[in-house]
Amino acid sequence: MAIFITMNPGYAGRSNLPDNLKMLFRSLAMTVPDKVLIAQVMLYSQGFRQAEILSKKIVPLFTLLSEQLSNQSHYDFGLRSLKSVLVMAGNIKRERIKNDIQNDDEQEIVIQAIMDSFVPRLVADDLVLLNSLLNDVFPNATYNRPSMTRLREEIENAAKQMYLVCDQLWIEKVLQLYQITNLNHGLMLVGPTSCGMLFI
Image (cartoon, rainbow, N blue to C red; front, side):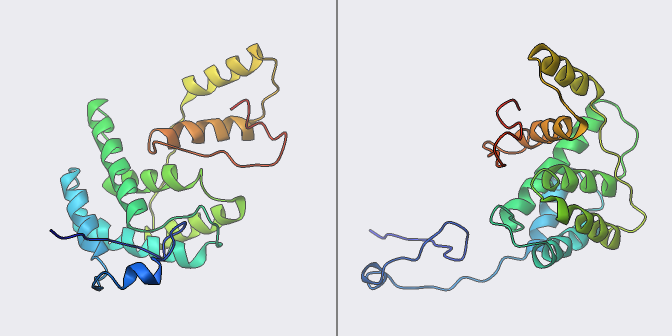
C-alpha cells in the first residue's frame, strides 16, 4: 500500500507540512505545467479554431496581470483561474451559436470571458491597467459587454419595491455579481459598512 501527498505550499491559504510528517515521505519535485499547451487543448476542446494563436496570447496576459496588478489576496492568475476563463469562453461561444449570433470572432469571445471573469474581482485602480494590458496583448480588439437590459430593469424594479435608492454603480455591481455566479460555485462580498452588500 502507498500513500501519496500532493502539496502546493506557495498557494494562498495553504501551510507547510510539519517536519515530523515530512520525514515519513519521500519528496519528489514536479515541473511547472505547460500552460500554453493546456490552454491550447482546452480552447480546441471548447470549439475554438484559433486555439494555438489565442493560447499564446492568453497565457502571457495572465503572467502580465499577476506581475503588474496590485497585490491583493483575492487575486488569482494561476492555472485554475486560466481554466475557468477558458471554460467561460467556451460557454459564451456555445451560447452565441445557440442564439444564432453571427459574430463568431474568437478573440472577442476570449476578451469577453476575461473581462466577465476579472472585472468583478478587481479593485478600481487595477481596471485601467487591465484594459491597457488587454489592448497590448489583443491590439484592435473590441469588448462589447452584454447589455443585459432586461435584467437591469428587473434589478431597478426590485430596488424600488424594497424602497432602495440605486445608482448605476450599485446596479453594475449586481450585474457583475450575476455574471460571477455563473462562473463560480461560491463567492464573497467584501466592502465597508453600509455600502449595500446586504441588499445585493
